[in-house]
Amino acid sequence: MRLHARIYAGPPGSVGAPPILCMPGLARNARDFEDLAPYVAQRRQVIVIEFRGRGESAYAKDPMTYVPLTYVQDVVAMLDDLGITRFAAIGTSLGGLVAMLLAATQPGRVVGAVLNDVGPELQAAGLERIRDYIGAGGSQPTWMHAARAFGDLNAAVYPGYEIHDWLRLTKRTHRLTPEGRIVTDYDKQIAAPLRTPGGSDGGVDLWPAYRALGDAPVLILRGALSDILADSAARKMAQALPNVALAEVPGVGHAPTMDEPEARAAIDGWVAELPAA
Picture 1 (tube, rainbow, N blue to C red):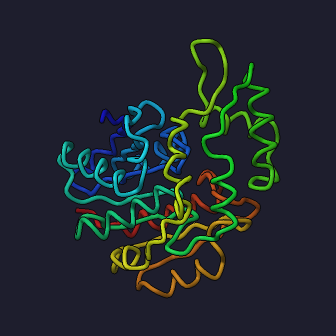
Picture 2: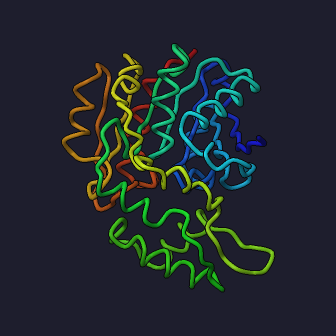
């Protein structure tokens, strides 16, 4: 598989420090980090990967490879190709699940993690909502039409958004086809594993993967309106490991964009705790 990644060079003083690997959510791509990545890159190197089937990464011939363990293998192959032995991770939703699985399967490599509105316990209602819309077809004739449609679909997630906010988010998540139509920027077949029995939750106990983060600095970001990560689950996560910070982003659901001031402040504190070498 051909994988696409954006690499942001850190400052000269950060050479030798473990880089930060950013991983997007299920239907998202590298543009989710177009503001956060250069901001964090003021302090150390940042790598933003696009999972197979998203953005500029290749689409899979077998749709049943659109599963977390395959994404883990892809990420490890990319890190090995780049010669990266240790790294910190920022993962939104699916990206956070992959971060936990990397900690479990690559002992010693993950030196810190930001889990953006995700954890080892996920709410069934939110998973069902995602399964209902992921992979749906359709296109729009203009960016404004697409933004309004995207806003209608996600109004409960970002209730305070205005049309300029929806345009910004739509341009991160959609693309222009050669025919001049606006469509979501991912392979619709990423939904195939979710359609299988148990595919929305996997039926896997992820607590061992979460605990594999050990004493590394962990930041849990939770959207105050999230239907994926319950407040009780986030607090349980905060108590399960020794070096965890929990920050709630007000007024948003699943998931915070991490452009919010509360998220940025929490991420600043997390980066300051990462090992320098």
